[in-house]
Length: 174
Image 1 (cartoon, rainbow, N blue to C red):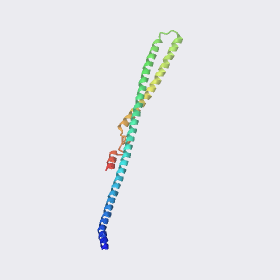
Image 2 (image 1 turned 60 degrees about the vertical axis):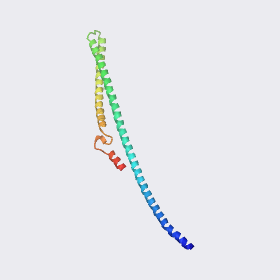
Image 3 (image 1 turned 120 degrees about the horizontal axis):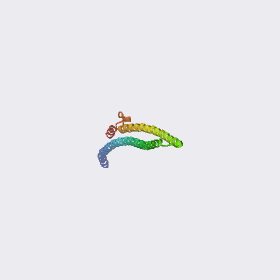
Image 4 (image 1 turned 90 degrees about the horizontal axis):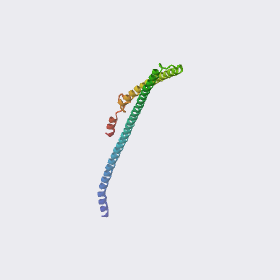
């Protein structure tokens, strides 16, 4: 009788144990699938974060280049303005000296004034040459700044797209 009772208990518990093992196996399989999905999601998130950081860095570099070119252009324009003011001032001085020469009767004084006029004209030529160099530099900087402002960070030299960040984002989040 005892054996029958033990056998009855065992026969009832074996299907329950088999069901428990099967349930555990299904739970474990579901957890494994979920862990794999989480790993893929983390990889996508990491990839998206990296791509976003690269895009931000490119944008910052672009803005930095644009700001540097703009400042350099402003500096050259200030130099041109200063040169023009100095040229106008020196031209007026040379004109005054030239006007003072004819009435002079003292040959030493006259020679000194003529020397000052020649020196003034020579400086005017030098400043005119400097102004021309600055104007050339101004045009170069203005062109570079315009090109830089027109270029997008994801387009090298304003040409065809090298990389599409929005496409990367869509791929990363899907």
